[in-house]
Each structure stands twice: as structure tokens, then as C-alpha cells.
Length: 241
Figure: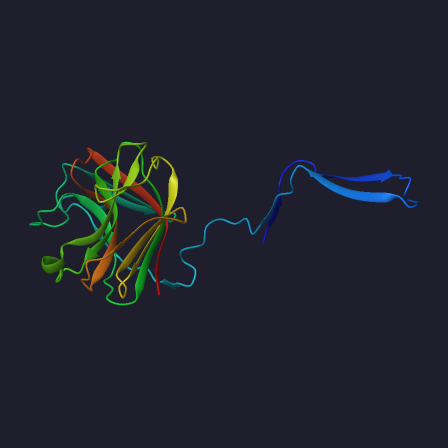
């Protein structure tokens, strides 16, 4: 626990006033305590709660998806714990015959019960837009019934680079060229999805109750994508509960 005191001198004055009265033989004493400026004491001046408190770390397993007609190293790298994902809007899909837009992503294992949490630090270079950097995908067998995804986090170029729930609600502004901390939790039992940026909650919603999901991260082109899309990711962790 940290204790922070307001800056500036703390002054107190004791004022003793004695007055005599013809009808009094003893002095009347008044004690006045003045404190200038007002004492400010802040207890426990810590940041927001850690979204991972009470969660269990999981071993990270993933499959890299990148445009099928180029070498993996032309769209993906991992050096000193920092992932770098990039893709061009002219690239092919991640596998031959697939009709989705270009992507370079990590695909994590499916989960069907309990709660799963994604945690990482991300940095999006200026000029990247119209791309998804994190998503919760419906299990492949359930996608035709429930839809392909239940949550996607888009980067759009306006307002200094901004994070959006799909292309709709804006969640955070001014994310270009700086590291920001991202946590996304998903409780399969309750269906609740919660998003935190720099440990502060910025969004929550209910899933579509599919029951089988997996998370992905990287860059995945969306409507209005820029010619080049890239993201750097470090301190990547998965948690369960």
C-alpha cells in the first residue's frame, strides 16, 4: 500500500485568545485549529485492478496463418519475444481455395467451457487501418449456424488510430505508434465478453451462445483496408478460469 500526500507545506496554527471580563476571574480560552492548505491523503493510490487476478496461466499453443503463396518469413517474424505480423491488401488468402481477405494471424486452440483470456501488448504503426488485430471466432463446425465470429477488434485510421468493436463502436483513440495493453476475457458459461485497454474496461457484450470458440491475433484485412497492415505484439499470454 502506498500513501501519497498532497504536495506543498502543511501548516497548522494554534490561536489562543484570552479575554478578561469584569464578571470573570478566570480567562476564557478558545482553541482554533487551522490547516492551510487542506490535508489530502490518498491511500492505496494504485492503478486499476489487474484483469488477470485469480486466473491461471496457460501454455501457449498456436498455428500461424499467412498468405499461402509466399514464405512465412515474408509476412511474420518472432524475435526476442516480439511478434511482427504484416500483410498487403493484394495478398492471397491463408490457404488455396479460401475466399477470405488477406491475413497473418495466430490461431489458438478451441475452448468450450470455463473462461479464456487473451493478454498482450500491441503496437500498431501509423498507416494501418481497416484491419482486425484480435478476434473471438466461432468453432468451425458451429460457424454456419451462429456466424463466423462473436467479437472482432478493428483498427481504423481516424482519431490518431482507434480501436473499434467491428467497424462500429469506437473504444479507444490515439493508439498509433505506442504500446498499449490489451486484455479480452470470455466466459463461456455466462456468455460475457469483456475488453480492457491499459487495465481499464472499455467494452462488454454477450456472445451468440455457440459454445465452441477460439481466439486469434495478428492482422486480418477488413472493409476499407490500407495497402499495408501490420502490428507488433509482445508479452503474449493466455489465461483460463
